[in-house]
Length: 247
Ligand code: ADP
Ligand code: MG
Image 1: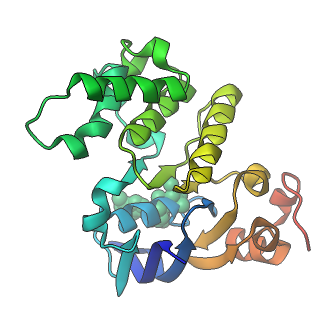
Image 2 (image 1 turned 90 degrees about the horizontal axis):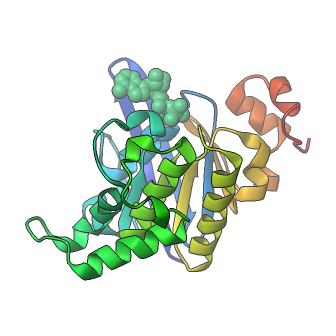
């Protein structure tokens, strides 16, 4: 079975902070996978490290059976909202066209065909009417949908989304999760960093529970287990009010 992500002995440190420690994991392709764990657990670090965006130590990192560098054009990354400068003046359609750049090459201008593809992707996320607006004018949920459209335009096989539901209205959250399910059914692999456990079982095929190292990985009913949650979060009690976990 093909693994979309294969990581062996991944460690990442920021000065004196060890964010990830000898983490090894294999994630099967064609799944919708949630990466959960408390604040500061290293979820964003994990995504950035496998993308090769930050220095990391590892025996091996393979994405879609290739090195991160080889897989680059087949992997789409949507950073955490707080990491994006939303005042940057760019129109919605142009933000989506950036998704076509890996195929475009450096100095080629987008063709009519690329524009049509970008518009079709905006349509898929219900944002075609906003094509000519500035991205800074949109709501959080609308912005997230535009970034998803950009990932679609890239026609990536592996999507990495960091907290896509934070600061997003319920309507947009529904649109996004429905679309992620369709993409999964089309055979794509989608990794979603998600800190809210209440919907984790409903949203994901596989959960990866993380806190500096892997606490558990597997089907949600196995991972959302009181003792594992406690191992990751320290205190399961605050949590039990929000989510039903089996004990
Ligand atoms: P999460 O996404 O799970 O909330 P992060 O991956 O952002 O966690 O962070 C993991 C740990 O690394 C935290 O202790 C955080 O404070 C630290 N960290 C993250 N980014 C940096 C950075 N650029 N410089 C220093 N420390 C960082
Ligand atoms: Mg994070």
